[in-house]
Structure formats: structure tokens, C-alpha cells
Image 1 (cartoon, one colour):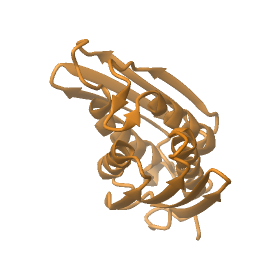
Image 2: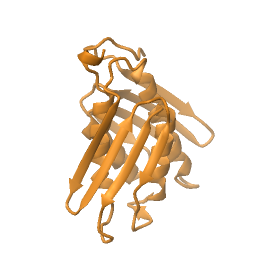
Image 3: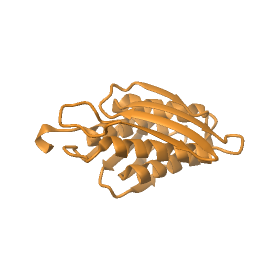
Image 4: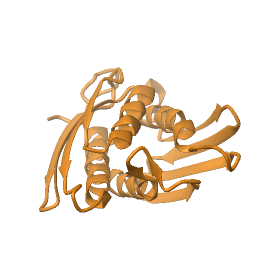
Length: 196
């Protein structure tokens, strides 16, 4: 698939197939999409997180992951993050005309989360989010940071995710940051005629 386009054209798409002894993953994304998605990773809450990321970013994502979940979630989550990051990097092409930087705050009830992105070519993750429980649904909460680290590495982005405040009784800061991550992904990867 062609991953480069002139300003105004919708050709910023990519398909990645990643197959290892632990996972088999196929990812297709369209950076200029409508937020359409089909997601199947075998981990219900992870599917939900990726669906919401697609919906809030308006980036079409079609993700099929088959992993060694009979062992644990590590390879499934890590390799899915790596594949999505590769697809984003490929779809961005030469990155001409992108806005590059974005940040967003997401208030939800008593919690406030901030996300900032720089599509810099310098991968880095700052993670300042904690969970009061070990699982959300069947997903191990320690896997969230691992996913975003893997994604940032292959996408070549600097990504900061921070829960500014949340009461200790809050079930999860994660839903609060989905909208922020989605809006940041859309803004930073969007094109502008003035920056083309």
C-alpha cells in the first residue's frame, strides 16, 4: 500500500503482518479514516481500549491478533503494540505537513488525565499512571504501560501519559485517558496546508 500522499489526499494507510512463534498479527490502519474498527486480540478489555482509541482518534483500525494467551498476555499485548506502531510509522510516510505535536486533557468525573505526543522520530514513553487493582476485566493492568512503550518504540514517537489526579477509590484511570490519547493521535498526525 502507498503510505505517502499530497496534502488533501487520503492515502495515509498501511498494512502490517507480524508473525512470530508467539503471535500472528495483521493490522491495517487509515490515518484519515472515520474511526471505523474491527479488533480481535483475545483479551476483551484490550479490544475495548483499541476500539476506543480508533473511535476517538478517527483513525480506522483493523486488528487481528492470535497470541499465546495460554501462557500469559505479554506477547499478545507487546506484539500488537509493535505492529500498530509499525503501521502508524508506515502510514505517516515522509511526515510532510503533519502538525507533529499535540496534547489533550480529559476530565472524567473526579479524574484528570493529560496526554502529549511528539511525532519526532525519537521513541520515548513517560508513564505516570497507577492502578489500584491488578486486572481490568481479564487484562493485567501492568500490560498497559508495556503496550504504550512498544507502540512508541516502533511508531517513533515521544508519548507522555499522566493521570494528574484520581481518588484512590477510582476503579481505573485508563478510561479517562482514552479520549486524550485518541485526540492527540488525531491532531499530531493530521495534515495542514500551511505545514505541507
